[in-house]
Length: 393
Image (cartoon, rainbow, N blue to C red):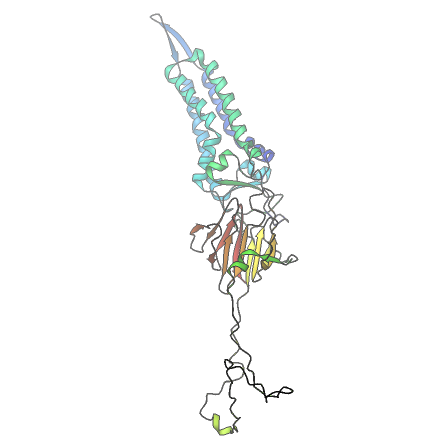
């Protein structure tokens, strides 16, 4: 297992290396079998017509296509369950879905379909050549199509190089909603708990907390009025020099303080006696969040989360949690968290890429900018391409 607990996206070079390794076996089989099949074609003249005997092409071509299909099904199933292929294993990368788990058969099939669209077109052209016996133009038709298909496949594999979101996805990844991670440079999410894990060995280092002012907490904090009024006792009136005694204002009420009464121990016989310690409040659960890179944080009352969170003037103080985001998918100040005993209130701070919450039952709901949403422990909060899990210490 990699020492680095963070997720490392696979580079374009490793993606291409893995793809070439995966393509070589079926490509070699197809080239050899079709070459033998074409070489075995014979032609004869009969009644002024040229008749081609394509028995060898059908035989060897069928064998090549059958072997290729078996290979593709085996690799597809392996990658769907584990994210592994022969190329992925040798290059140290893994395929995954949006949450960092095994991608599934549907996603792998769609990903391969986008990548191999050009090769499939050449294959269809080869079948048409055999069916309509256009053998004279076979080389002129199939040669450019095969080269164009190979070029398209390479371009698709390298297309993550032009992804503005941290080079995370290529065109085929965007279509299939998949990701590729370098498990030599970082951890393997499929075996360590998806995007959220790994929690069992995640470091519990808490970063230094800088105090700032939180806009949402300041705006939504209830105003608590102090209803306790000081009791004033009117003292004896001292006459002013040369004048009568000053009378208290008519609108100022005078409070009468009753005389203290003697207390007897038997007065409390009928009262319920409170045992020592029974009035102690129940302990409040400590809320923590675990980021998708494995870091764990204990939450203060008010927290700002983002790439480089900064409060605004006039806001209440808040804990700052900066999250690394090389792809700049999260905003500078993306979320505001306000702890509330049984959970947290999460507010999207008008971020560029938005936020969402996935509840323990798997329901995912997008957050409306500026509208607080209550999130209970066991849920996951997604912001940009990052995620954190809410739990209790």
